Length: 448
Image (cartoon, rainbow, N blue to C red; front, side, top):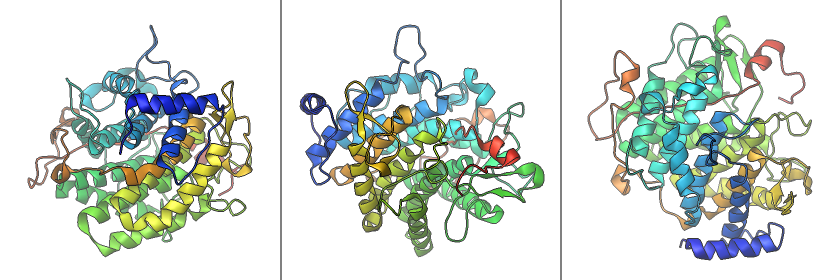
């Protein structure tokens, strides 16, 4: 049952008065209250709705992609709690950033626009469609925006090196154009798989399978389902950077869950179980079941982007339990322990509710920001998965209007879709600022 905005607001005020985030993982009201406090803290970082600012942008030092990820978090927040106080800024921001081809390619982002950047906005739109977040009154539907993202990216499939895959950067003049990173390709797999589940159109499923097979063939994932950072296509992807990040595992987890849900294929069930088991590298042995960023958290080297990565693993673990309910016993204990640990260190700032990064320590580490706050918010609100239905599809109540040709103006030869349903096409993207530094100079300072 969802709380009204006024009821949730009262709970939020009460929580703020306590100047800390108290979380009882067995109480829906407590979880909603805790998520509400974290969401309020996240909202304070956003300035895009201020007079003279740009909707859909965060202030420095945050990159554009993370704002798209943040609005996905607010879409999830509405989905889990029913609190609609952030809906208006979410719709405003997402419509303002649609850009060229109705595919989240705004002209002012071309200097740093990666496939992964674009995809994080596309996945936010797809989450809106799946969660039945109210469609905007004008402009493309949420589903059409996701389809346009997919279509623009499928047209970029690159067989000039490595036998396929997506490059990190979209434009040749950007640093990183010769890097094929796992998050860009994983986001494409995720979107294709979820569109397959949503629309039932086999073409999306074929693309998801194609991407999965390619990633496995070049070693971006291992046989035991560990996911690595990326590979240099100037060397024909013969060398792989073996740094592991939480979000790479998470983006493939939900994609595999969608593939299993749509096909019922036991092979996808085994893959999904393997991915979940493979995430053990991100759960601290000294603080059992508490999530941490293994590559940079213990040595204090996480950059601004990386401080948000746990948000996405938590997000996609929560949705995986809905899409593949049999995974609950594997996932829920990790989310519960991580949520409790995260809430315990949300004691910073003037309100004493700003969340730190290191959940394993038991005390606030003095770090605070968009990534830290969003991570705590996502891991807490994901515990409300039993309170919601969905994610929906066209056959199970989805209402967002499909546009199979969305984004096709970006390519000479539009993708031809299987005609079994009314819906098909979408996108992928995101910026990993350290990727090229890693591939060129090595990541000696990280734990692989």
